[in-house]
Length: 446
Image 1 (tube, rainbow, N blue to C red):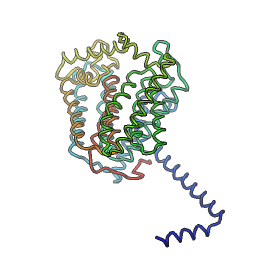
Image 2: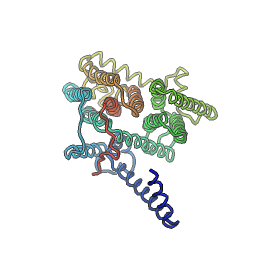
Image 3: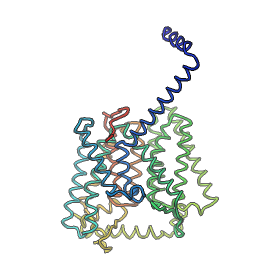
């Protein structure tokens, strides 16, 4: 050991100032090149294409993607499918099937088959032809990605988390550079996105940032992440969407018990208590700031409408759709109205309309049989949750699932909520013991 120290000191004395400066420049250039190489690999990674696929519905209105000759959802789906298939054929990727993941895959494909068969009795022609491809192909594809591709690989999870947060900042930048303020609801509507689309992306990014904040060991990093959480919270208060605010707050509140229970060491538990206390103070400061200018915070104004006893037009419409879906299920309890049959049997015509609740949508269109399949899928998640979902992704998976599950009960149809099935796959994949940690893992570079 002493000989190595003497050798290093001798080498240091042998180098003059010019050599030292040249060596420093070489090291700096090497670091820059390595960072640039990582960024390029991230840009052309499988996770980038998959995040674009998940956000294709929102990105289609952007000028960059609206000029594409092919639909963005189809394009990104084909690239992901061909890229991963090629990696399987050349042996760079392997599919590891466990009893839980195999059963979940089988139930999801049975649900897709039921959707196909329901074309025989659906009363819809237009909406059903659009919806069948989304439900029977895109939902199993999302679950497959969470279960077999991204979920079992910690490096892929890290890249996915970073990209989903990055695209959220893109939406916020677009919202606050070019927007108009609706006079009736005082909610932001940009040229490219509606406020609910922006809000749902912000709420998902908050889950990622909150997980990083709780697990951060750097004081400076914790301050930065807390600031980002505060910024996201203010954005949600300004946007005007009640649903995104609820899906952001509830998972964090419900996960507090998990955050503290997973802290085995007393020192770690104390640090997490301090972090939660800082977040609580941050919430108080933000809420105090809203009292200064209440007109600027559209979401609170819309919340106040409900608290005043007036449900508001949006809530009244949703209640009407809930009741219509329940009536359809009562009239056709076993198999439902068939895929896309909800608006037709509900008397709204053959248009794209849905109850804005996942369970009611499945009950109305696929009956009790579809409902049982959906419950079975969720039961597998609960069963696998009984096993230890690995760290450090434990909290992230649970937060993402709660976020997407709550959102599925408030807004969107089956295809809009395909992120929910992706998070189900993540949670089941997280219970596996043979987790891959492949430094700069196999990314799709073609």
